[in-house]
Image (cartoon, rainbow, N blue to C red; front, side, top):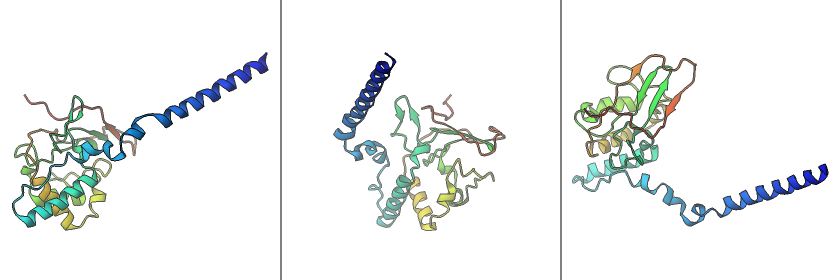
Amino acid sequence: MKRFLKGALLVVAVIAVCGFGAFLYFIPPFFITPPEEFGKAMAGAAPGVTDIADPAERAIATHGRYIVMTAGCIGCHATNGPQGPDLTKYLSGGAVKFQTAHGTFVSRNLTPDKDTGLARRTDDEVKRVLRSGTFTDGHVAPGTVMPWPVFSNWTEEDRHAVVVYLRHLKPIRHQIPEPVPGNAITVRGAVEQNYAGKDYGIKAR
């Protein structure tokens, strides 16, 4: 009897594994949807530069757009809405909150809004952040929060192109909380990243 039960269980297990494998193999999206479709919406979210009249500046901004897209800036600097990232608010920030041993940080607004975005900063200030992670108040963003150690390998032309492109984005008013220093996490090397589909920006009053 025991041998029969063991055999029956083995048969059931084999059938279950084969059935699950068949499900994974024939599941429609992997074959009906072309691979490039999965990231099409995110890739198409980056505003174009065709409205820039000056050909030289348009060429620089085109290069900056390519870098911004391939560097994945939208991964952190999006603004979340009820159904996920709100792609109409490109790079207006607030999608991710980082808690580290150095403090709490929220992804910044990279649009050229005069009150809440990059219009408050000079080109050199923005480039310094890209080069060394050093902000205007002197604090340095940890490399685990902002991958500036990678951006530091860009050429000055690359950084300039990125700034030119960001200056041509649609200004979006979206207030982001300033960094809060302190030991938000006390375990050395630990990093907590909150991807809760929330907008961590400051709600308008």
